[in-house]
Image (spheres, rainbow, N blue to C red):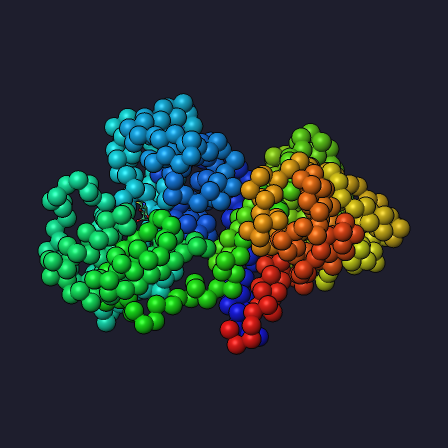
Length: 542
Ligand code: SAH
């Protein structure tokens, strides 16, 4: 196994097999229903996998999410609440929302009975004005809770490979504001104290002031050759780390084009010779990868891609929509009459259980049933609801599932929890094997009608490296959308990777060029196939 693959498997176990951001069906627990509640939640530094479980759960329960400019928008897929950005600097036509208005808004929304998540980059209380917001809520008598987040500094340390409190180098770490009014001649910072500080200094919001910060530290007594670094976009795919001595750092930084946000780190914990980190060695650096799953299910794949240092691009081709409970409840009332319960997608599992709970039942109502799942992801989803699948075929194909079930199906009543559309191989083969099959549509699956303009352009201008196609219907839908945008398959600069041979065949039938095929039929397998294709392209020895 090559080095890259070894890394990859480690992450896989952590990230995908434990699909851990599934919470029990919405049982909203509010302290005071009538009065609403505000949660000041740390979004973490950028990598969407670095939000806390508590933060993710609260997002899934929020009515309104007010997020700041440092929050990774991917996290908004965790909520079905209304999302609004509050910005302190203008981006495009974006509105600037003064802090006092944010405070006021939080109070008003909570008074209207809403559950509000105030989502802030990093930790809400580290240079994040979380304290001011908490005070405003306190004064207004609103219930609130603060959920900490991973602050940019600790992420920068971890992802750039510096240990701020390395026992050999430093016995303390200080987080310092680098944001000072350039018009003021006198700094508000006590540089003498900072120069004497027995450890690592991390300056937030300091890039614009870097010359002044480095010069003042040296003037106050820091050694000019103290190791220093700037880390931009810590934990994000475009993370950059620039190192130099304290004296040279401003000039070295000026020679690079760095995109904010950035931190300045000063201290012996930075080793100028070996400033290479595990994150730099991740195999998808520089790759932008389109995830075609429905938007609310892309977070696992996005987190996996980010961890590999690729950049996930959410471009859902289909939408998953719920069905009315009344259309499912008659079948749930007859559960005792079935022998088998069969699932062919993760959505099918989750939506089935949503209806089961909504009907007042739980998995005890399924105790007498044998279960079958089309593949490992579907089986894991089932496991999260407390059930083991009795049958999971080796290959993720309806034919394989039907073949595995057929010997047990004669004279049995089989319930298939399905989407409104899809292949009919399964019921046809099971009926031939003598089963009595009931098909229950537990969710709808609808096509998206066009790509957004940036995505459409990315398909032919080289900026979108790969797109993953995860079912034959998604492959067909991708071909339709290309046609809609007037893009011929041979104009694609994006390479296509398919989840399985069946999907690859469907893609080729549509005239699409397929560059890679997963051997494990999951999104994890798709990412693995991209890594394999990219490492096959690397010149040997690199
Ligand atoms: N509450 C945030 C900090 C907000 S102040 C936290 O705990 O991280 C904004 C500053 O944070 C930026 O100017 C930059 O200095 C720093 N910052 C935030 N995210 C960053 C990131 N991903 N990489 C580097 N610096 C970051």
